[in-house]
Length: 268
Length: 310
Image 1 (cartoon, rainbow over the protein chains, first blue to last red):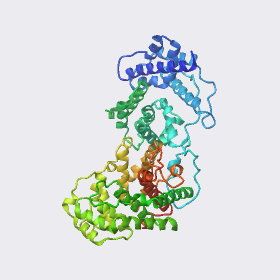
Image 2 (spheres, rainbow over the protein chains, first blue to last red; image 1 turned 180 degrees about the horizontal axis):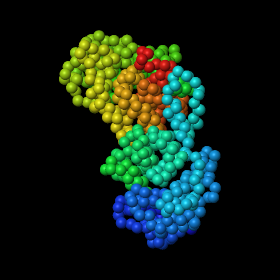
Image 3 (spheres, one colour; image 1 turned 120 degrees about the vertical axis):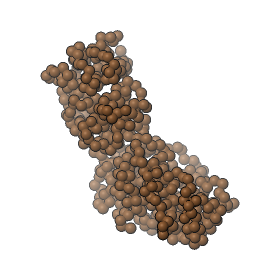
Image 4 (tube, each protein chain N blue to C red; image 1 turned 45 degrees about the horizontal axis):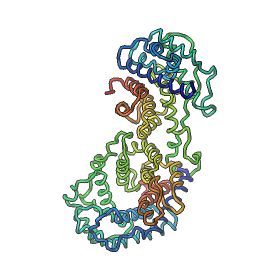
């Protein structure tokens, strides 16, 4: 199987697992749904890859909807780490290293940390990376400083873009959305708490661009902050409902369902 | 605001103003124009908009001597086109309930071009309950209120209910920022223009609306720049200059400077620009007006111009 083809198969398997998680989150009967996902698969290796693709979100029903965590689930997740071992050393955070493996390492850590928590085991199957997405928010700091007349701000490049502005930062935070679960904490969460404005702008931008999957991922952070009592620049409740009614696909549906759980009884 | 922003903003607006001046005859009223104006938006309204841009260049006095001369020249040109006010007067005589004679007169009144019979007529009609009750989109109500304020028609118990007018607008509802469309974007910009009299009085914005715009303006500029809606982007950049704490991002100005043509034309969007001089003017005159105003206000705010100081 070519790498591209296997990626497609793995993503399809992750979507299938997302639907199972969604059912359990909604209260549809489901015991050991992670293990069942592997047992019933035609291609067990793809099913294990699907677990790693979906990552920590596979545990959302256990964290948010009181689903019972079955030892078979723990075994399936553990097996996924055995078949697809994460790098021994965690990659350097950007800009020292490339973003993609670093994001993957954070997602692996989130999966491993929740597995250890739910299974009650010591030791993690994936190490915790360092760092968090860096936000310079140049757009904000460019607001008037009329008296200075200085050249104090760094010039933006020809494209006017920087990968640490709120646009790129919020997309990167969206890629880390499996960390936006109540049982996890770390520097990425601290970064989210420090920048509700950039998250709200990022979610707003994604909705206006009709990039609903990205909007849903960023909105999960807003929902988490809301659950923690952080004051937001926008009301997340109608935003989540808008995404629920406009977005499509199992992944987005799971993100929205998790956000709704985080918002609690306020969600319609 | 950095010196480089000021430099870029000045350069964009000076070139846009010069382009409006060079091509002004393309915007002249046809010889057979009557006050009936079959299509007011074709030439009549754009002429008023050119006058608006020129009047703000003169009001702010933040440009160089060349730009001030061009602006005065454009004011003279537009005033002559309107028969030194006679046309506006006759149009109001014929169409008492229309607000465009008042609104078109505003830039001239702002710069001392007065027409006494028109002002007497405006004082009469603008006070009538019939005229005041004309049904219109809410931001248009603010346009009339600001026009009356500039001309001085709101004195002696003839004031406008600004808070009620403001809360009737889309922006006045501080709506969900993730649900706005192109036309509503223009409505929001005009609500700000009229509340602040084009940046003269930033405190005319209620605090919650100023905070709302400070929060969301960068997002709206970003998404409309991505799809190359330069006219709306430049209008939103004017909004940034109208805030109590101006929002004026260097990247926005560099981007607008990049899309400006060497002759000063600022394209309204990402579509190809025609070669025909008449079409070029017709399609892109509004964006030149907007860019002139945006740059003028950006420079003025950078130099310390605020409501409190005027």
